[in-house]
Image (cartoon, rainbow, N blue to C red; front, top):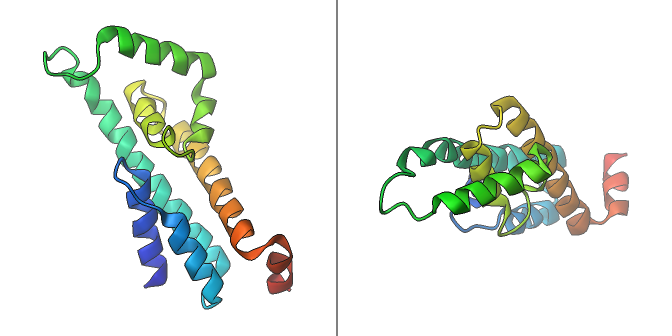
Length: 148
């Protein structure tokens, strides 16, 4: 049940909804009752799946760009595309960052980054971030002593 809870927490945290799966991951790690690799995997998969929801939303957002109520002007969309093109798809490696990460995954959908590339880059970034959370929660030494 802990793995599913973590997956759901990470999923919600990756959408535009507020959440903090790092706290749950750290808590589960510190209990010492769970398999470290499965915790990392659950958090990473949940977070990537949440980012895929953002991506899907992004693919649909431009359908409404010509509507009067649409909150983003054509100039702002053009500027966002220029910025995204400037930094390229590799900016998706930073989808784990607070504040800008979730909107970045929506932008990936808006600008139709190939889904395979999107998933690969987002998974690498988020997997490394959860790895860093594990190292900070347990300490580097604990990782090697628990593995042996």
